[in-house]
Length: 88
Image (cartoon, rainbow, N blue to C red):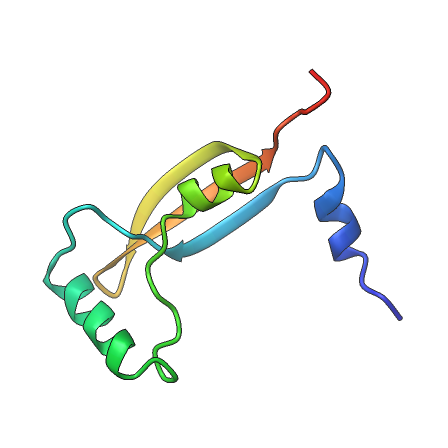
């Protein structure tokens, strides 16, 4: 049995929501501590901050909505993206 999820994501009208630790320009104390712990204990803290908007743009998506929240003192990006219309 195969999953239908990859097919839905590949359609030109598909949308993708990503929630990830945000990589900020000026990380606060908690974010710096988390990154240091990630480097030291990567197997336990396997999620690292990433520039979600840049990664999605580089992958050929257009960011439709984005906001930053906070979870346990760490910045979290909530990003809604969709494929860029390449037929235009």
